[in-house]
Length: 128
Image (cartoon, rainbow, N blue to C red; front, top):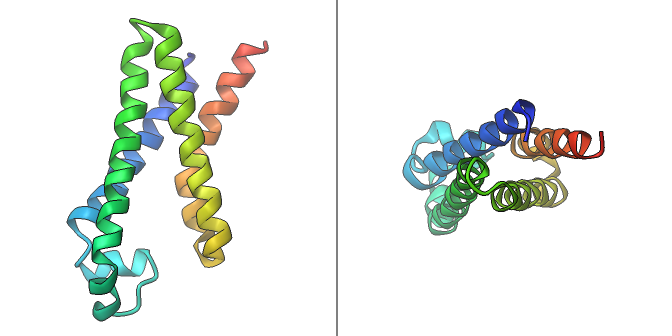
């Protein structure tokens, strides 16, 4: 894996850790609600259990990406597989976000852009 892949996969992991923090730790903060287009505290309270669960999905995706980057130096094929899988998962989740909540298109680019760049760079170096 070249540096571009490592940087953008790592960035994707960091972004997903930040989603975890917003969704699972800071969810009841009104500033966080606005990021996710939640209009009021009552709606935030209803969504809390679901969003907290979603936050942990994001944390586990980040751990998978970080694990892949770590393992790449020891077992390249295993590390590469982790990175590819978690990046594909992140891109898929970003596409679902875009098609289920079109107003969250910015979120799609934030969530899916870095892993897409990482995979594109990996594909480019693999077929070079």
